[in-house]
Every structure is written in C-alpha cells, then in structure tokens.
Length: 288
View 1 (cartoon, rainbow, N blue to C red):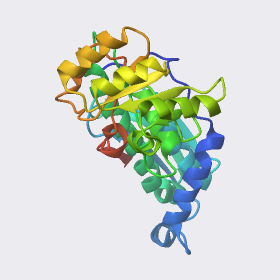
View 2: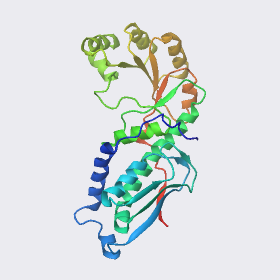
View 3: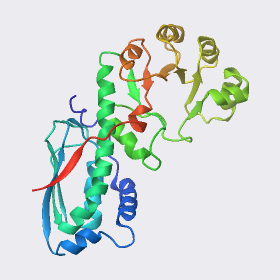
View 4: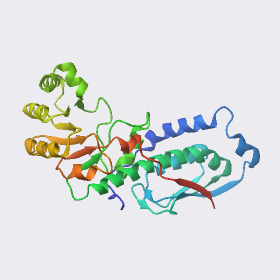
C-alpha cells in the first residue's frame, strides 16, 4: 500500500468533528470525571506521549486524536508525524503530544477509539483498492455506517483511496428492490421519480436481472446498480449498457471476489464491509 495522492481528498473541518469528540468524552468521563488520574497524578504534572502504529496500515483520523486532547487541555501540543492517507509500517510514530498528564490520560481512550476505528476503515479500503488496480472500477462505500459517525467513516474511505456513495436519503435518488416492488416494476418507478426529481438530482436504480437492466436502460437513469449479478451477467450488462449509464456492482463483494468483479468492466463496486466490518488498526499511546 502507498500513500493516497495528497489533495485527492479534503480533510473534515474541526467544526464537524469536535461535537462528536466532545460527546464521546462526556460519555467516558461520566458524572465524576477520571477519578483514577485525578487521584494519583498531581494537577500540574505534564506528560509526553506518542501515538504508535502496532501494525502496518493506512492512517485516518488524526484530527480526532488532536481534538480529544485539545478539548481537555487547550494548551496541549500535538505534533503529527504522519498524515491521513499515509501507509505506515508497524512501529511508526503517528503523532507526538505534550500536555497536562491528567488530560492526556483522560482523553486517551476516546482518541484511540476514533483514531483506530477510522484508520481501520482506511486500511481495509486501501486493500480493496489495491485488488482493483489496472481496472476502471472504483471502490465505493455504502450507508452501512456507525450511527452518527457516517461523515468520519466516509472520510476514512477517502483516506484509503476509495470514493463515497450517497451520504443520506436526501443526497440522491436510489430506487431499491422494495421501491420497485411497491411501484410495480422498474419502469413505473423510474417514471414516477422523473416527475418529482429536480434537474440537479442524480437517479440510480437497483436491478437484479438482465431483463430489469434492459427495462432500466430504456428510461435512462444516471446509474444502475447490478445487485448480486454473476460474473458472466456482469460482463453482459457492461456490453448491453455500452456507456449509456454508470454501472455499479453490489452484493457478494469480498476480498476474494472483488478483482474478478472489477475485471468485468463495471464502473463502481460498492462494499458495505468497508464501514460495517472493518477491523481497527491497532494504535497505542506510549508515554515517552
């Protein structure tokens, strides 16, 4: 894995991240604060420490670690030694910090929970992206995210070289199988959304057969999701669409299947596992 090209993704503003960090700190500090650190560490003691990667991976979420410390000690110093999107080796120092000892120790778990979680998402995404090298397919996420952490997790996907699907129900129209069933078919569903969608709104429809694909193509949606298509049917779908719609493969995607799916010629491959099943990247905070 290599670093994601700098500038290929934008960092999230602190204004978006800080409320989530503060809520996590409030959950951990509870009603009485960190009674362990408060009991055994003098209030004026300071501590130097470093965030260290225990395993190789891709970094994401440095701002979460920085803000967790800053919320408890505004005078603390946070010195990054890596950047979001960097591929790092085991033992790499990701950031060095100096601050009030109580604050550092009280912020430690929240900082590590978020930093490790997001770096895990970025690492898994980078692994999927590497599997599709040499093809036109791009790896994208889904809405299968941790409640309230969607913006952070989708940012982590970008850090890993992936791209984002829609962020919410108001972001774009996506006609799923239950919409199709409720409307009586792909065609009727697409006709109805055409009557209501603004000219700036993208339209995607999910199909589960080549017959439904042909019906969808007649109505010219922007994107067609090919749900659980076998490899030969994906190849046929690419030939049938012939560039008339963006094709997204979905369902049955894992690290063993993604390369073959990418080689069929689809444009995008959506992977729910990027956010719902990514293991954390093991990161520790070591006093120095």
